[in-house]
Image (cartoon, rainbow, N blue to C red):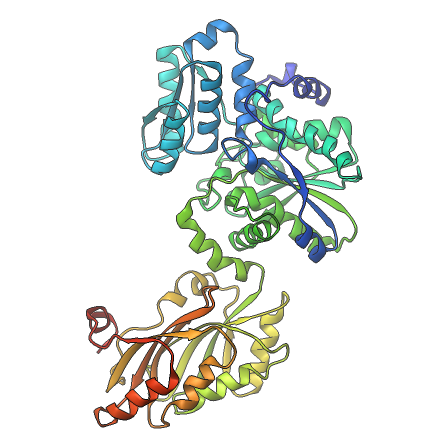
Length: 521
């Protein structure tokens, strides 16, 4: 870190960036157009593919540049860092390349896949504490005790300079793409090392290019610090974008950001999930949440400023995605892009109302629309409350659709932006019902095409009642649906004939112990 008397200028950082040692381990990552996204936004979006690095993150650049500049006597003793993510892998690989010892202190809560990755690069893993703060404190103790050099993840001029080589590459690569036009660079911010390096280089070489910082709405330490003109410590941070979940930004990175960053944008979880999908569509690669923040911000910036014909670069800063998080990302991407609207619809608890509602969906403006979700459980003799998802084609449609349903006699509540509904309630529609007598439970596989549900409803006997219905579009060419039907025992033969005529694969689950414990009265 530097003192106010020795504060480095953009010219100083330019020299450090130009002489940075990163390419012994890092690669010059691609700068490629996001063609589909660019067409949609009517602006050129360029993706800087830092997910292509050997550790799938830009962190390797700064870590290696710091370590490579250490004097021989310090190198001989080794290095240490505290990290549960990309910085840990960057330090471990850098140390392996230079043939020195690397101690990586990680919280005991670190996923095994990340521990294994660090060990695979030759790092000595020390597990300590439940949080990054605990790990950092222990790393400081070990550093002093063993004479190791601490490699900070962001608040160090050599680390910052290493990250700044990304901006150097972007400006050089623009010419290869046939145009040197660049209106803004969008950069995710955690502790601030990446944006500090990028801003110093851009403002020294192309000061007219805007540098825009991006933070999560629940991890916005830099934005708050700049607004209050002093570093602000957040009491808590969100962990969805764990690569940028930093409670306190660095002293040096705060100083630089305050002086050189043009603007800031905060993005939420749904916007990032939608951006992960956008990146996949254009690259067939899956980045981690922090890696998609810049793209989410580009979309927000274009919508806010109504720009056309401009060129934006978004740094995809990492791709260390936990596989089990993909389910959540897919679930929220459509809502984040507002390609899905969610509603609570109240309808009369009478035969035929379900079918009437389904027919209405097919007649709404913008149809044909897909029913993306339909969850219902009988619980009231007079009214039925149904959780419904519908596909949309543009942002802002959910309110208009809700009004259309209301005009046709269905009381409707728009839940598209309701966090409780999106995260929890959609999975909780159900439970035992004292009204569901003679209920039979069946799992169906429906073809995922228009008319499949109406065929089911039209072949049902009018005297049979749907008491439970759970469906969620999972993106496959078929839909898995759970249906509860009230069928008197005297209709067993007719019901068997109905299933045979329908022709949809099904499994009866009426005797399933899970059903008897949680759904049957």
